[in-house]
Image (cartoon, rainbow, N blue to C red; front, side, top):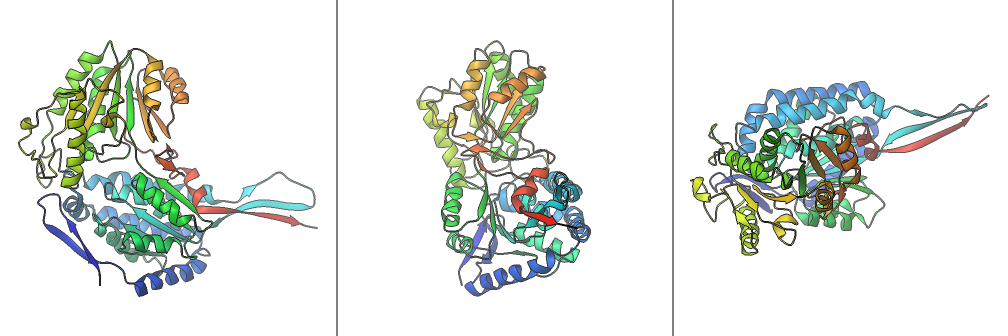
Length: 462
């Protein structure tokens, strides 16, 4: 029987070891999901909502132990991990529960004499959710809760770095009394994932991860007529206009760049600052960056934990070295962060100036605590540079001028346009990306559309 190990970035120890599912176990899970969906779709929505609410309550009540094991699995500081459950996870889950009735109700059309006509939103069947390690609960909840509420069954596969997250979901739904087969999880290899996608009992695939992973999912799904939702990479930009509140922009953009050690698809990876503000902005940005405490994430004083793997840190350090060789200037001395150590996941944050778009660090996803900052002369140059990317997940503008932000946002090739904030998902708004950031939509009432299919009723009466 094949197995895998989860190596903790904290100390390099084996934190968890799990067996991969056998072929027999996979077959049983698929059969259970397919059979359970027939009854689950007939369960009143009010009952489905109550069961999901109870599961969410369970997760929130157990946020402390869940947070500690999450820190061990992927390295985020313990001072922050509880809020993935008590904050974003809970907010998104409860919002999707609250809007379920309105989002799923029949769609009426105009009256026509002698006919009754409406559109019903049918569940797809079984939804296969492939979740990442960097925000394992925040990303997966976007699909799991609305998929269940819509009448689908769910099979979850979590990243091998965070396998306990799938098991905690199962505990919560078991505690809530969810019927057998409605929610299940599997620990799988990439090959097994591809094989499951080709199974006729899978009706939709929701994937969050890398661009290469998204291409693999698309390839596997191409053999069948099923849809996929793909939330992929990002190289998210920020533009600090000449009229911006600089201190506010610095405070929020530093956090947007370095929270979770920069390991966020919608984290800030490049910043464009109006030339009149450039020097002061950079000075303030560097000063605040130096206040981070890099260290053991189990220490409550730590504000910057290790990256998930030493190889991830090495990748980012190579980007930095390449940029410096091309003329970039690094403004942070890693020696100012004693825990920084080459060859380990512990990586000091970095700020680069004198950068340009010929450098990989300004074009390719870093997924690390490094950001490049460029001066621009006007809005037009900022928009051109912000759009000069294969990605388009979010972009932020920093200015008191709301109308200017809307005008600029209309020109940005992005899924979300922020003004005076960044790196946040509002569950009342659609979460989506363009270009290599993926396709599809989660959250908001629109998030239910991918998880249902329209069925038209055209009834002659009388």
